[in-house]
Each structure stands twice: as structure tokens, then as C-alpha cells.
Length: 137
Ligand code: TYD
Image (cartoon, rainbow, N blue to C red):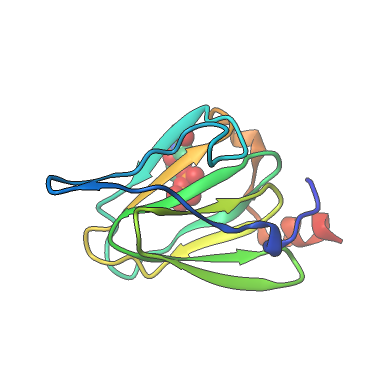
């Protein structure tokens, strides 16, 4: 696993094209995202009080967007932790490889949109916190 810092996980302002019919936000390669997108998925119908995540990735970069509603992302690099609240569809949190993340405090109806740099690969996951901590040492 790559050694990473939570301070490399930044909230990126995305664009917003507004007119009287509403808004559109475009996430387009090179313009505002520093990795190629190979996969998109979204979390929805998340029951109240439930958390998601609870793992790290070895190589995967992600951009996490609150497409609707709000939730918190807890980031942990084995040394420091921080919590980022996402509640606007025109901002995205970039999470670099080597970061333990937990998604918490989903509002009712929240949609968590994730743009990911690789296709799904279970071997890229670190799902045991003790293993994550030992890999950061
Ligand atoms: P997981 O990444 O553990 O979810 P979360 O971090 O949101 O809690 O994935 C949940 C399940 O979905 C797990 O069985 C793997 C599967 N899955 C895929 O098959 N493909 C994917 O792209 C993702 C993200 C998950």
C-alpha cells in the first residue's frame, strides 16, 4: 500500500452551469480531475444511522460527491484523522490511495456519487483496520 496523507485528500470545487431551468455540474478529465475515470457508482437508500466504507485502497483514487443530501467522510492515514462534510453537488472530495475512510451521518435521501480511477478489484481493498495500521508503519 502507498503511504499517504489525509492532507492530500482535498475538496475540489467543481463547476456549476446555472440557468433558470436548474444546474449542471460537469466533471471532465484534465479540466478539474487529476485521474482517469474508469468506473462510476453511487450509494443511495442508505438507512438512517448506518455507516459505509470502513476500508482503504492500495491504488484507487476516488472523487466522492454528495449528488444529493449530505454525509460525512472520515479520513485516516494511520497518523491523523479528519472529517469532511459533503453537502453540495458542485464540490467533490478527492481520496488518494492509502487512506482509511468511513462514510457516516447520511441525511435522508442522500446520494453518494463516486468517480473511481480503476475498475472494481477486491484485491485493492484493505478491509481490516489492524492490517491498514500495520501497512502504514
Ligand atoms: P463496498 O465497496 O464494501 O461498499 P461501501 O464502501 O460503500 O460500504 O462494496 C459493497 C459491495 O458491493 C461489496 O460486496 C462489493 C460490491 N461492489 C462491486 O461489486 N463493485 C463495485 O464497484 C463496488 C464499489 C462494490
